[in-house]
Image (cartoon, rainbow over all chains, first blue to last red):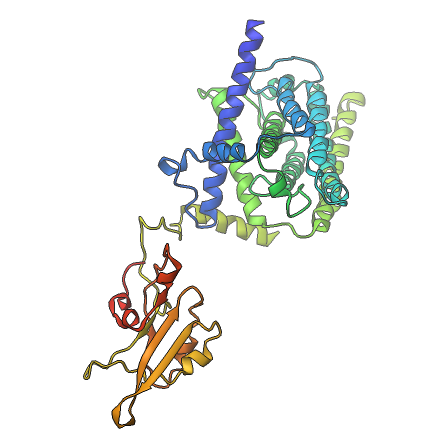
Length: 311
Length: 140
């Protein structure tokens, strides 16, 4: 029991520290990309900025609703099955990948219910469309994941990492990695970590969503992004596998922040999304066919090798 | 796609460039040339008299109606400026008055820090507008 509590404490501490660092990097880097200086009044180089923002939102309103509570719950529950490092996992199971993906889909659906609660009558239909687009980006990601599962013959995230001790899956599945990464990026873009979330339907949602609810929403969006980056790391980039004398945990942190910064840079360089038809086009005309072809090729290769012994 | 790649490198390069914004008032920049501050009544350097004769063209042209001008006739029928009042709370610093003045008697100074606690202080009289103190182009 004590070990589990210790693990829970460590996981929460790691998540909170990373949310703080990522919020700071997000603010500072986004400002520098705009040739601005960024937030600077809160201590040296604006280090206290996330804390100031936290108290600012808290001071506005402490009211929450049932959806934000569930979002908070699921954004933490997801880390019960996703291993951050080899030892930092609460529940070890053989099908952790499936459970994690289920939690992720539930989280997105809960975000839809949360973002739709406005005084506008058509708010649900509008945010519903965006959530459906967001969920449709899961299709190429699922095809890519299926290819990885076929190669490694396991649904356990820990075993997937362990099977990459010789070479990372990115070498075996470059196409899968590309589609998975683009799908992550577009999900990142729609979640709107840099500013107002695209899931928010009306112009007044910023006012209506301030307070504790807004903090929880932001926290859950960070959790989703962390989950996506960690899953990308685990599936393609060797997870917590160390290189030479560098410890695996350090390698994971380095890879995590590199991917986060690349996602921020790409988010900024794409600009604001005005037409959702472009996203739908990218998804259905490029990502899904490419990932499907990748899956079929992998499947065919494995059948030829294992069943018919051709290769 | 090519535009996205190009933008990516521009945005990446921006991280290492010097920011354009400054922390005012700790850091300051030189006021840009041609900036429009508070109106200034010009004075003839020889006779040390105000050039403006109070024709009222600036009052007519002002879209905000923030200028009040009155003239009076001295002996020998010579017209001189009696009263010139500028309401800064209404002025939008468009510079139309300066452009339309036939006598070239007014210009825009570089004075820009205009915040006041009392609204009455925003009404500037002739004596205040004549002062040349704010016309020097200093650091913003």
